[in-house]
Image (cartoon, rainbow over all chains, first blue to last red; front, side):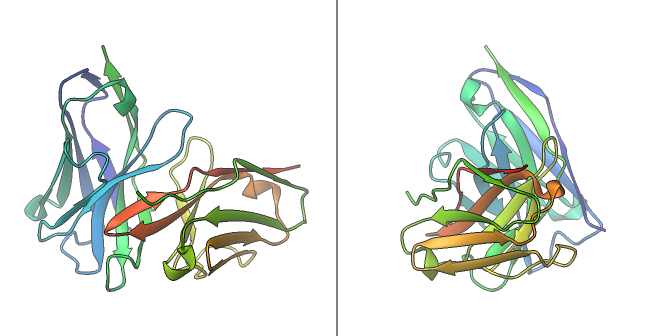
Length: 124
Length: 106
């Protein structure tokens, strides 16, 4: 049974860096069939796709966040991470890590597993 | 940037058919997925590749995608289906979600 678990600070000061890690268990992070990514949801609002990373390190980011985010993967520890710099109050959200199942090209994938989510609040 | 548009809310009586639309330019040329999210819970995929249902998802959930609109259909809607529903697709190596639709069953 695949499990995804987010970890990281629940409170970040404005202008600083948000860092989250997702630990993967019950499945291989090095599988060619999956990308690993992040989705966030501001309180009371909809889902926003942040980006994904393949086990080789290839990344695809949301253009609106591209200048501020970095994703990385640590296959030896079955973890992948998100860094978001220069945060503001608008970055306050529940951050989900998610596994994207892939069937060939990038356009043919969907999220088949989600972490429980972690609330990150940006304080002024 | 690519956008997906969903109605903010849909209401249906128990046992009736609910249809939730998702509009995007030439969406029919892309794959659409649908996610169900209940309060305080993580989303769950109910439809992927336009019309495929993951194991464990009831048969009353079905999907279609043609021209500019993807549709999630819930036949014989149950009270337990009350939730927020989000469509998702990919465009130029970027994924995008619709704004979400709150399904009320009453």
